[in-house]
Every structure is written in C-alpha cells, then in structure tokens.
Length: 397
Ligand code: G3I
Image 1 (cartoon, rainbow, N blue to C red):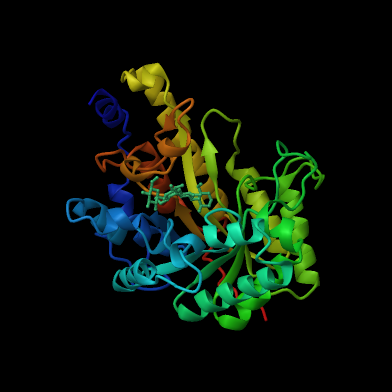
Image 2: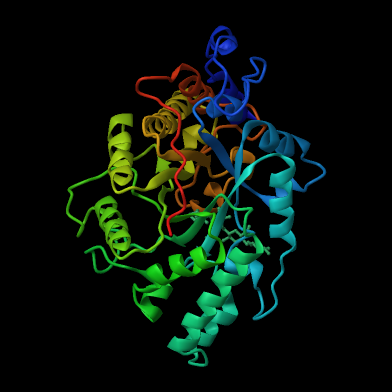
C-alpha cells in the first residue's frame, strides 16, 4: 500500500555496522559483535530495552515475526492488558491466571525481565467492583479490603518473577481536568482518599520483598513551571518525596512517554534533568510506555512523502530525546516501548477523530523505521563520561 511504501522509502540507513563490531564487552556478559539487537546494545549500559506485549499477537500462529522480534530485540516485557484487574478477576473471586501466566512463562523462556502492569488503576477495573460501589453493596471498608486482597494475591503469585511492579498508575489529574488545579483523581481517590497510594505500596512490599515498586504516569517527561498546582511532574515529584518521608516503600517513578509529533515535546537535556531530580530523591526511574504518534492527515493516508517523512523524523527525534535522557541518568533502569510495531498499536483504536498512528519503531510490515535506527545509534555511540552503567537499586523496606 502507498503509505507503507513511502514509510520504507523514508528509512534512514544508519552506518552503524563498523562501529557495532568495535563495541566493548558488556557488564553482564561478553559482547557478541554479531548481535546488533537493541537488547544486546542496551545491555552494554546495563539498560533494559522493553516492549509491551500483545498476547493475541504473541500467540498468533500466523504472525511469527512478532514473536521473533519480541524475543530478539527486547530484554524486558510488559503485558499490555493481561495483568490488569479486569483481565485477572473478571468475576468476583474467580481469578483467570492463564494469559498472565503464559506471558510470564514466555518472558522466562526468552530470558527477559518483567515489568508488572498494573496493580492499582482507575481503568480496566472489573465491572463487578465498580457496579458494587455504585449500587452501595460494596462500602468503603470492604473496598479497601478488596484492594488489599487483590494486591496481595497478584503480587504473591508472581513473587520473585517481577522486576518492577507498576503499583499505582495515573493517580494524578491533568491541567485540562476539572478542577484544573492538579489533584488526585479517579475511582480510588474518590472512594478511599489519597491514602490508598501509601497503602498499595506497603501491601505490595509485604507480598514481594524483592520487586522494585514503581509509581507510573504520563506527561511527566520534563518539569514545567515548578508549581505543583499546574506542573504534573512537580506534583508527582513532591508526592514521591512525601511518600519517602513517610517511610513508604516506593522504589521508582515510571514516566510513560506517550508523545505526539503535533506537540512541543522535549529535548534530551530537559528529559535528563527531570530524571536526575527524581534520582536525587533516591528513586529509580524508567520510561515505561514510549510511543510517539502522529496525525494521519489526508496526505499521510494518500502516501504523500512530504507529509509522511517529517512525521517519521519528528517521531524518531522524540524517541531519541527520551532514550538519550535515560542513558544520561544511571538510575534510569529501562526504556520500554508501548508496542513496537504499527501492526499492533493501541493508538489508531484510541485516536480516531482526527485519526492518529505511526506511533512505533517498526511499520506494519515489521520494517524498522527511522526511530528504530536512531535509538540503535544512541545505544551504539553512547559511553562515558556522560553515559555510565545503570545503578541497580535495592528494594526499599
Ligand atoms: O478484551 C476485550 C475483547 O474481549 C473485546 O472483544 C474487545 C472489543 O473492543 O475489547 C477487548 O478489550 C480491549 C483491551 O484493550 C484488550 O485489547 C479494550 O476494549 C481496550 O479498551 C483496551 O485498551 C487498552 C487500554 O490501555 C485500556 O485502557 C490498550 O490495549 C492498552 O494499550 C492501554 O494501555 C494503557 C496503559 O495500560 C496505561 N497507560 C496508558 C496506556 C494507553 O492507553
């Protein structure tokens, strides 16, 4: 199709082959100069490159390339949906572990670390729970107990097999919400108050002393005004600082990294600065859900290279800015893309008016895009003194 042809024509040929053969041994294992995967190159910096995994695609016999690329290019994986509450406990008391177990088993076979996603979030909560709260049959005390039980059950089942848990996800409002002053938003804050956040971390720690416990959110890639009333990054920073001051076992803050080429976005220096400020609190960081979408204008859909190529370049520049920022901060442990191919991306299904897409590092036919080559170049050409190996944190008690 026209669109795909022009995307392929827009690919840049990054001349990395010579340099790739010259890279030094990794900290974890000897560097294999023939292994030019993202995962091998990133492990030179003790950085894990991850992807969200769509289990339907991973288990589709007709889509072997998806499985190959998950295995070959990534050393960390996140289940896109299978570890969310509505997937795990569709009816009360009946956990369906099948898909999540299969996901964790596949990660183990592929020698991949797992980011557990997600324990507490206001979306994809089972209907029996939201209905029960709405009709008054589940009161506040019972709701808190249900949450404790869920966290304990899930974290215990996968104890020792999860590297980083997203314990609480997207708890903070955005400036476009009402009221516009930033606040704790959503189902859990409305029904339990913001104290559920500290509770959730404590319950998760009790169930797995070895996992790194993360708070995860979007629109926190860089600091803004510095006023927590309108600067979400500052709000999250101050929240994490206060949790630490209370002795809450939070180990890290995950920055999702859902960007769009139509926005202003960030440069690597701003991104590194934000990560440094979280690190100064004593926290690990990670990019957890990176994708960079674009408007699918009429011209893009018609295959016009003058409309497509600038978007591919802008998308690549944003992946690059986030990865360079992460490389510059030794406590930035992993860089996860939220799907790696436009064939399986949440973006077109969610942003359809106006339509958006082109958000990932491979096109729909699994051809690497400019973004893939640019982040590969970042991994190849980075090194001391500005890029040092990652510092592995100890889970906080
Ligand atoms: O499982 C049902 C299936 O039975 C049904 O036939 C189908 C019909 O639409 O829907 C399926 O559920 C969909 C689910 O993905 C699994 O594919 C939901 O409709 C759809 O809403 C859901 O979207 C997910 C979204 O979270 C839900 O909030 C996306 O795949 C997933 O990429 C997205 O991920 C979130 C992160 O967890 C948190 N940060 C933001 C990120 C993007 O929204």
